[in-house]
Image (tube, rainbow, N blue to C red; front, side):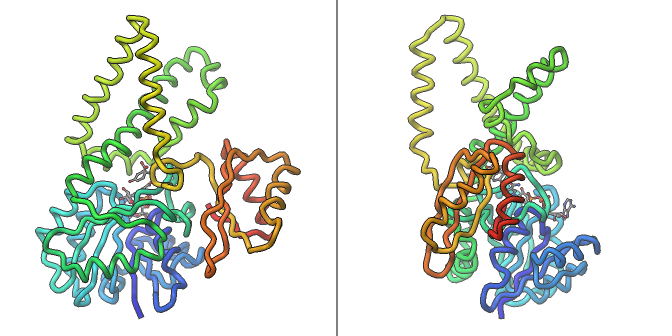
Amino acid sequence: MTTVAIFGVGLIGGSIALCLKGKPGITVIGHSNRPSQVEKYLQRGVVDYATTSMQEAAEQADFIFVCVPVGNLEEYIEKLAAFQLKPGCIITDAGSTKASVAACAKSLDFGQAYFIGGHPMAGSERTGVEAASSHLYENAFYVLTPDEETPETVVERLVDLLSHTKANIVRVNAKEHDEIAGAISHLPHIIAVSLVNQIRGYNEQNDLYESLAAGGFRDITRIASGDPTLWRDILINNRHVVLKLLHDWSNETNKFVQMLENADGDAIAGAFETAGNFRSKMPERRKGMIHSAFDCYVDIPDHPGIIGKITSELGNSLINLSNIHIIESREDVPGILRLSFRSQEYLDQAVILLTAKGYDVHL
Ligand SMILES: NC(=O)c1ccc[n+]([C@@H]2O[C@H](COP(=O)([O-])OP(=O)(O)OC[C@H]3O[C@@H](n4cnc5c(N)ncnc54)[C@H](O)[C@@H]3O)[C@@H](O)[C@H]2O)c1
Ligand SMILES: O=C(O)C(=O)C[C@]1(C(=O)O)C=C[C@@H](O)C=C1
């Protein structure tokens, strides 16, 4: 039996738990300091067992996932080093930054246990176990940052366990990870927040700004609704990288200032063309890179006409679909349909309708 302990059963930890729970030979233990949370994990069926004792969860684990906010990672890793961990136990984390946690782990003595940094490149602006989904990591990239001293067999054991997430595992150096994550995740969050705050200022004088904001504004600003504490921690932790990126960003926006001052239409069109070409080359299936704003996943049994039936049910109830995508269908699992909507309202209506009609719907 393989025992997996998860510290921080929120969006990310809860989704890992859901990927692993019920798989042959795997038991999932969830930990929270708060008894009410422990109760909740059990009630929602996210874990097999839950406890408020960190030591109890850690000492029986073969794998430990630390999925707490970046600002609390080091304190958790330090506590783990004080326990009698099982020989061969693998500790990993899910933090959005990797260099500082890797340095912290390196400074500790885990006995015969190992630490390998991790970061699933998928998530959402939502938090908490309520937002967890067994489909979150499907087709996304999942970064591991083993160092040169981590034995290959140990990395392979973790990769093997993570195959249940259906993510693509990639190995990246921790420092390089932080530079890239800074550019493709941390900087976009800052841009989204600054943009929303700029418009919020105009809206104070005239609330038509808010009313007229349509697809473009909503698409680029969804991530501005991320958890403030979580993002505070990420940005402070990776501030040296992010500061350099903001400097480059300022140069990019200055190019637009110049192009507009010069009314240089060719340069403006050229900027859109270059960006469009690059973006269109990003494969759609890479959920971690680009994913639609309001998605749900429906398990579809292998019946002819089932997709038409689902879309008709939605159409009959005037629920507008913005996209539909069949995620690979394999012999051992039912097919999965990804349904995308333009608003949270349509998504909520679709989930209620399809669940009432007996479909298995996941967020
Ligand atoms: N949100 C994303 O899109 C995303 C994606 C990839 C990785 N991550 C990383 O995963 C980790 C967890 O993020 P999440 O989105 O699951 O957040 P979340 O708020 O949904 O979950 C955090 C969990 O940690 C627990 N926790 C334990 N100690 C805590 C403390 N002192 N303060 C606050 N919470 C504490 C919370 O109870 C909760 O269960 C973070 O390190 C984050 O950087 C997030
Ligand atoms: O899709 C989102 O809402 C996310 O914010 C996910 C996202 C990202 O920026 O892409 C956020 C933080 C992570 O560490 C990894 C993924």
